[in-house]
Length: 334
Image 1: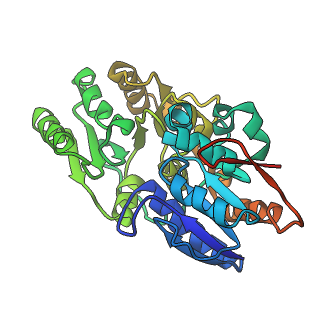
Image 2 (image 1 turned 135 degrees about the vertical axis):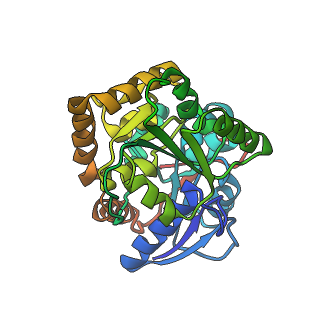
């Protein structure tokens, strides 16, 4: 099958969308498909389209649907799609209707969709392999924060939590990610000046980030919205426990009973989790055990099999029809 794989993230981007597109392209090729990855659809014929991001890829989705109405169309929903755009943006909503299949990256994502779309929604967890070895234990308890500095990530919550942890000088936060605005960079610099336990190392290659993660005691994921954070997969693969904001996307990745979550945007609540993980060996061991227990969901073989099943469902069928549902060109597939 010839597949057009659309991602809004360019070839030089280090965003999660780009990593997903690159990984999926390799997996699809290993399944025998021909895959072309692009930011915008170039109009060339394809047997199917897989588009990441309902809003940002809507133009490609609508154009492909119009030109090749009998070809399968898959829309992969990101965190901003699920937890913001499908509620407020007409393009994102139109993309939901145009898709033959919707893909969410963790099992809580399906619940965010209108009921009429859930039957055509599939869950495919992302995967990770981390081969970096841990460095010998040190006196420091290292927290890794990995993600670009933007509002959706609530990027400085861990640094702000240090004010509630002044009695733990052995803590260290290593923050990896590009500042997506000058204001974010300035704030990171101010926080480093205020507390030497916080270090922002900026944008680093993915392999370098995985090295820091594997040499950390804890991953802190403070996001306001996540479709299914691949860094959780990477932490599970590396055997690093996670403390995360209590949002749907993180609960869907870690499991509904996972104890290492905290109230969103509360540095005091996050500080309590950090303190407990640093000082309570039994609690830390429980977090680590439960994080590692999620590994089977995040294995490359499981993600590849999810893609294989998805495309098997979309094998060509005779005489499929569509009807228009809106002036925007959105169509509902029967």
